[in-house]
Each structure stands twice: as structure tokens, then as C-alpha cells.
Length: 233
Image 1: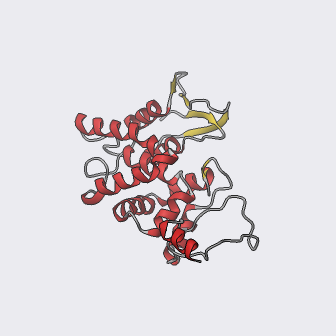
Image 2: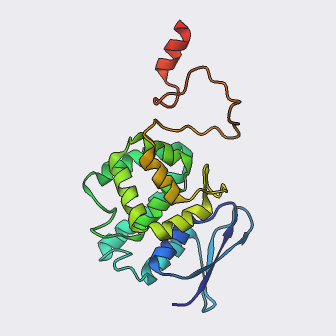
Image 3: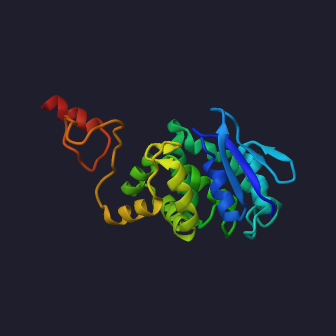
């Protein structure tokens, strides 16, 4: 297969494209030299180029060495397209939890998003969830979405070597493009050992210099019960 060059802006690496190419067996040269806000472009060895995230993803799915990576038939390919269009919602801060809730319900009786085998839809949705960084890890520790966590962990284990490399390079604690990025395998090991409540990220906080009104506890974010306690105290 011809070697291709993926160009994108350094501050917004297309994690889904890079992860999908790894698993699909598509060789890429990474070129993070585009101006901020630029749309990713794939330059092929033939001299042609492909512009846009979903267009590139569909190309990768079609040339993949993985069987049925774009679905087994036209109907499944259409379902894959629907997931590619939906996936960016996951990276929208205000819609993240709603997306997790929707995915958790959808995966209640399913192993994969489309059909009965891995497809590019699974990799793209997985990558966008992983790309939210600490926000997803906090939900993951809380075990709030059991079906989604089961699916996420299954893909993380099945493709650990390739996904570890991508996540470690491009996903920081606060999400895609926020380096330094921790190694995903270390995060998985920490998850197995850590049975505490959700970890709430405090950007810029220094250890030993943070004062809180309420002691840290497994209930996570402040809620109406804390307001009641504050008024009574």
C-alpha cells in the first residue's frame, strides 16, 4: 500500500484518523505543520489528496486490511457513516455526558457499534471518547456507564499496542492536543488499582496549596446536598 502524508494543525491532531490508520494497516507520515484551525488533509503517494476528517476516514475504511472495516454490506456502511457524523458530538463539552448516556444505552445488548465485528465506527467513537482525557477517566472510575465502559475497555485491550502509542502521543490530561499525554496502558493499570471516587481535575492547582470548603469525597461534583450542608453550617 502506498505511503501517505497526513497534514494537520498541531493544536488539534485528528486522533480518530491516526488511530484508524494504525488499525487499518494504512502507513502514514505525520505532518503537524498546518495553521491552527486548518482541516486535516491526506496527501497520497499518487499525488492526489483528500480533504476533511470524515472523507479521510471513509478512504481509510475502504482500503483497510481489516475485514468489513466499513461494514459487511451497504446498510452497515450507511450505519458506519451515521456514526462518523455523530462522533464529533462526543468532543463537544456540553454534549459529552449526554453522548455517553446515549452510547451506554445503545451498547446494552451490543458488542460493536455496527454488526458483529470491529469497524471504523468503533475506532472513531473510541478515539473521541479517549480524546476527552481526564473527563472520560473520571466517568470511567465512577462506573456510571457500565455498557460503555465494557465496550471501551474491550477495544482498549484488543488493540492495546496501537492505541497506547496514539493516545500517549496526542492525548493529555485535559484532552486531545494537551501534552504531555500519559501512556494509556499506565492509565488502565491505575484504573484496576484505584477504587476511589471520581477524580476532579483542577487545572493549574499545586499540591498542598488547595483549600476546599468541603472535604474531598466520592460524591464528586458539588450538588444540592452540599448547598444544604453549607446553609446549615
